[in-house]
Image (spheres, rainbow, N blue to C red):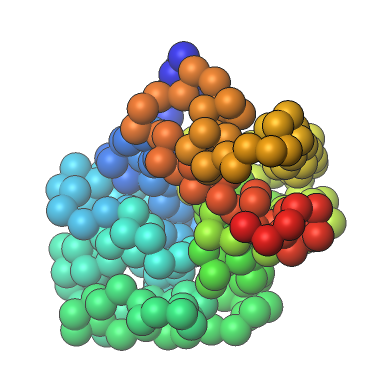
Length: 278
């Protein structure tokens, strides 16, 4: 049965230095839409993520938020290469900032080129890079797994984490590499944040419990996958067959992603020496 999602306003002031502007792109994987964030206390704020391209309602809401806060955008920081995070950059630069010279920072993708932004260039940064604006210090943290170059951001003034897609406000996320993803979850847990601002879903007010649940959830999935494999050692199960046994009451549109998760679990089990060659 599909989970009923929490209501998220199009614009909401979350703290003295954090305002969320919803990306107006709801969907199975984006939940209520992509959360973009204006960060800082001064008249020039950092924008974290930009949603998808061709979302005029988002641009209207972003302009309203800037007007209400009496501020402009200092620079843009992108958590990772997916289109619902970086895709809106050209629209924001053109329609909000009237400039192609805006600084757009992210970690560099290594396996493939980053998304083409036309005349807009990337400012590639390294792990632990500091973004600074009035009232806010953001430290870039490499949290691979969802994607290879995924960035989370630690807001030092609030002991808060902008988790991108590493942690969602509701449900769980997909990933490219389970082994590195598990390491990233532990990395965030070790920081002991007081709050998490995710890229999808509501604010996480119990971050340690949430991160513990994510870690335990993945380990439980691993045990389920192992259980299916051990239920009939003479049978060669396909990832889809394992998925059908492990994931119950799953919406049809989510089954390919769930099957992909099973493949990731199998690869991790192989690396850990818990199963033979696939």
